[in-house]
Image 1 (tube, rainbow over the protein chains, first blue to last red):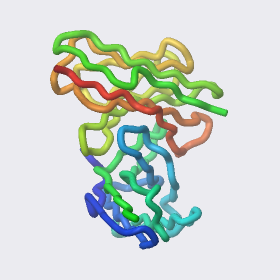
Image 2: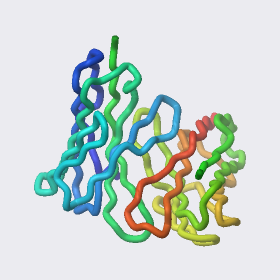
Image 3: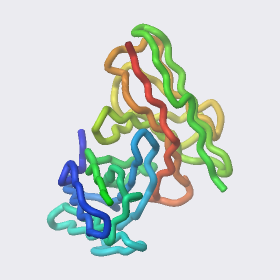
Length: 112
Length: 114
């Protein structure tokens, strides 16, 4: 079953605007990760936030984590057409290996 | 640098035929290896993972099996494909010596079972 559920399922914005995607999950986690997938391609890791962290930045990306609400958000600032892709959150509950449970993803379309 | 190779990129197979998808990793030793499946417009479902040669853990009982004959080789197989086996299959690896790390994905195989 899916651990994470992203919201919205699809998002269309213009270049230069900010894009915010949300992720909710159900069980306790060790960390939460965000990945990007271009159409028909593999996933690329964007950022990892540990359960004892509340906010993390990487370039134009800002991730927040609220473990009390079991939710996370990914903010992409000053979006570009090249940011068009699907974005997935993935939770790691710990244990053997990095067995990530992925959400259903948000499809982001950035238009010129 | 580490790279992951997955092939073929696309595959069309009839129902009842066998399947073999191969994934190899270069530039690292003793990686953790994973097979995920992605249905159209959906998230990823973990099928199998391996922490060492010959060590396979199955996450979802189904028509598929996995093997790890060599340290950096991971194979996904089926003896008889079902229509429901269609999907986008992704191989991934992670560093085994570090806990709770990110995954590196291959480019995927689009499997259509007709």
